[in-house]
Length: 506
Image (cartoon, rainbow, N blue to C red; front, side):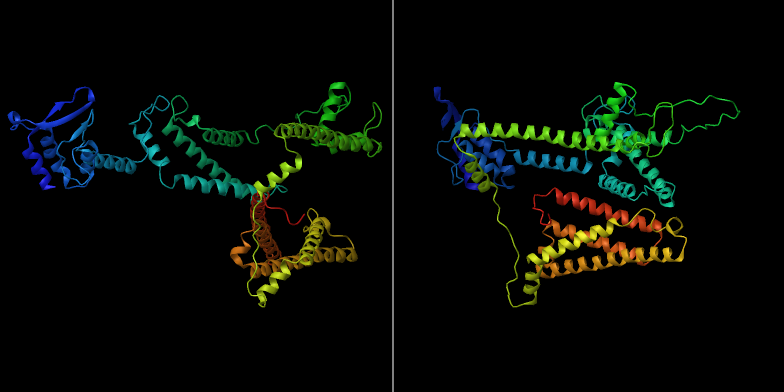
């Protein structure tokens, strides 16, 4: 590098015009030898940054001042408009330092006024911006959302005034308060809607605001619209006939009633009112016209089921014809297209098998993958489903279901104990199945199948149910545990149903 500097200093060349060639060439000029030539200026300028790295050398080579070996050329050629940036290193370092400082400072405040009150330099807005952009703020909000979802799943829908619902209601107040504070902080930080990047210009923020708004409205107006039916003063009033909400008094109400039956919402009440109806100007009598049930059953089955299926079939047939027309344009038939689709969508079927065929692990594997074992498990699942269907509402409340005689009371206890024993037996059976499959496939291969994950979580839930029943845990904690396990099971079922794996138990 020092030799290159001396060669450039002693050359004393100057830049001359190259005519129409679009280039600048250098040549010796004895008269101007004492003047500082461009090459000399380049050399003096680059010496300051030469010691840092080779960026300057690469720049000189790219413009033709140095050769590929890094030495000055005899007649360097400059491209028209080309120049060497000898401060690129310092500029890059400055840019890197600025980027690093910006990353340390975090996301800047939007350069707009928030709600025409908070300027970008306002202390309250800067505090809200600091809190919203904390490292674990989003993680905290996500944890609160998960806890709120678990609390909703743990509510008791039967006994609304239970102790569990009272405690969960206080948690609901806390969760709503957290979400409200989050909304206020983000609105103060981002603004409402007028400028780019504001709060309501993001779809997820709009959804959050709607949820928080309705939660606050529910808290404000809850229980404020009740009234007494006793006016406080006795008076004589005429008895009047009040028609049902869904009736057949005119065409409009008849169409509304039939539409309600078609949707399947509340149609048993309409059926009960029709069966109890008598004649005009007479009150209802229980089961007076039982033949009306035939009309509703036929109407409910024919219209919602067959007509909807016919409509769906028409759509499918239309699409099939459209697909056949496209196949005719491609000059291939259905079988050829199916072969092409199969070749495109075919995936290798992975199946685990132990290597040592004389080991116990291989024998267990042959047992769990055999067809009789699969059929046996399917039959046990069906029987277990029937056993679970034999439970009824308020079964454990003896004041509701305890018979009057000792014989009937003993039969009631035997019935409950039989269901409990069957439930425990099936839980043990499915637990053994789970353990055998883990031993046969190994934990890693077992949990690769989403159906195995579903089976495992179901077994854990069944074991939890049995332990809760045997340990006589209070109804409050029992409901919470069962609800949490049920919530996890539903989420797992949704995950499994969303997969493309074939259902092996259908």
